[in-house]
Amino acid sequence: MSKGYESLVEAVKRDCAHGEGCFNPNGCDKEFFITVPEDNQELRKHFKTACKHNVKCFHNYCDKFKWVIDRAKHYGEKLNISWGSILDSWEEMRSYSWNNYYQEANQPEIKHGKVKVFETVDDLTNSFNGLGFRCPRCNGVSSSPYECDSGKEIESGKKCDWKVYGLFKDMGKGVFVYVKDQLRGETIFIPVAWENDQVDGD
Image (cartoon, rainbow, N blue to C red; front, top):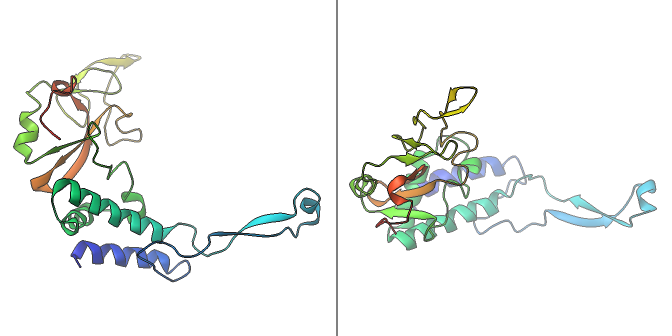
């Protein structure tokens, strides 16, 4: 298996050790919740049964691991790149908890209109046509795809400095781009040149 796979398995197993101590790469095979007779006398007047947490794990680590592998395979199929290489690149870039890093916002499905794919960085930058990027907060045009420097005022004379990597990210108005020769993807402000969807990316 790839180094990325081994790195991820190690991280997942560390978390699993604090739960049931088991690891199933095909997803959790335990019942997280079970129905038992209600033992609280007051509640039994209204409910005969109760839902009880049945395992020590508080996160579906094994299910999340399977999601990551399935998503890497999805990328591999869509991009014609080995899924092991995709996972290697994700693990190399990951600098915090795997359970927080791997999520739909960081590894979105590659769907037309949702993710733009380019062969090289040059292909990506050339598609911008030097027209700048639309800030999702102030709607001004920024020279940066990550931080607004449009100079537009938002409130109390303050100039907009919205950041795509901040708490509210792109406010659902940006775009996820993936560059194949870099094995890297990220969310950026929507390029002005793409606003009519006239771009050669997939």
